[in-house]
Amino acid sequence: MTLSRLPRIAALLLMIGALPAGADDIRRETVHFSAGTSGTTINSKVKGYNSVQYSLGVKAGQQMSVQLDSRNSSLYFNITAPGASEALYNSSIDGNATTFTIPSSGKYQIDVYLMRNAARRGETAPYALTLYVE
Image 1 (cartoon, rainbow, N blue to C red):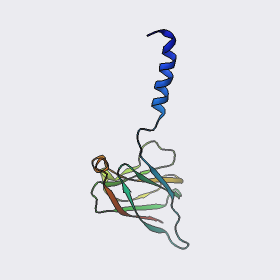
Image 2: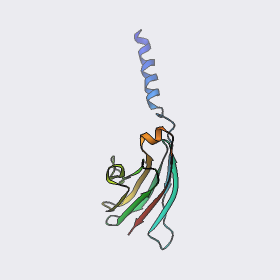
Image 3: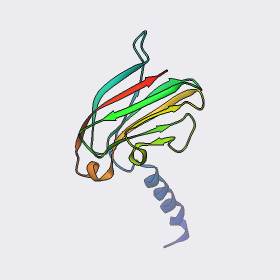
């Protein structure tokens, strides 16, 4: 291999690394409560490696409750605070329901996803996600 080919090979490797890893699809939705209410239940489903990311604006000091109900035991959610790189709550470790005090104001992300075992099999998981903020 000649030295003149190295920059082209390096550029090709960089382009390959920039491509998406698969056909995973993240559906993004913003949650709005109906006037006069403090919560909502979202009925939806995910399939395979696809997931749904819900965004919910809240204020520091409020209580947030999240509950995920599904017949598929491989369906979970993560809650991530604004600007955080790691989940504040991981339901695959701590269970599919939580109530906590919001530490800082902003838009929190709630990601609903299937674990790898079920995603690999292409399972579909209908669910009810109940969100409540007081």
